[in-house]
Length: 228
Image (tube, rainbow, N blue to C red; front, side, top):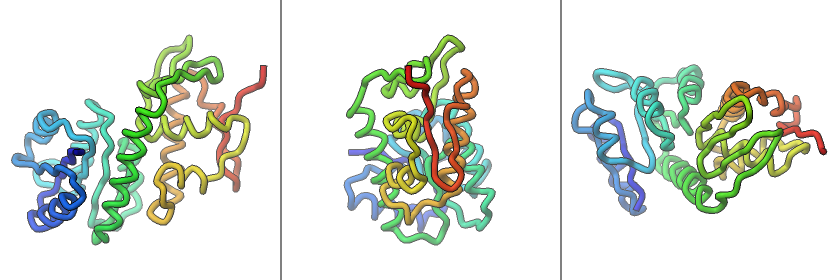
């Protein structure tokens, strides 16, 4: 049974989400003290976090930043605010998805299922190391290493890189990437994909290989590697 940590201060909404998710056999935990979110997260050790932006004491961005500094657990944001910058901020902080309130519960459940399937099934499907552009890509540890050092990627960053490497030197369309990542592109914006790819490229820049993730305007992305 997957454990979901729901960081939501609206008791009515929390209870409704918990009831719906329990019907799908998810074990849902809430916050008892909004000043001790990290401690409760550590105790629960959830498989996925759903977090509202507007919270007492500190907002969801604060807690996402804190959680992400300790763990790569998947994070979904909820927000009643209609600001595009909220989505951008969420992705930049390492969140995996963003849902605006009010939302249909089927959408939330579909997103949770897709992320859990992607993250946890993916980790058990392939533990192989991959060589790309002189770097060792470790799918199991979410790391990329070369003579310049090692960088740790988020789940989304590694998944995107894996898809691109498997089709290296070929263009992968934005539509194909979105479908691979979220299973149903109706629930995902182009902007979300752009932020994730930019974040991947920035991570790889730290070891000098970000330039090999190329943007093909109007087409998609390519993991370039010169054939030996």
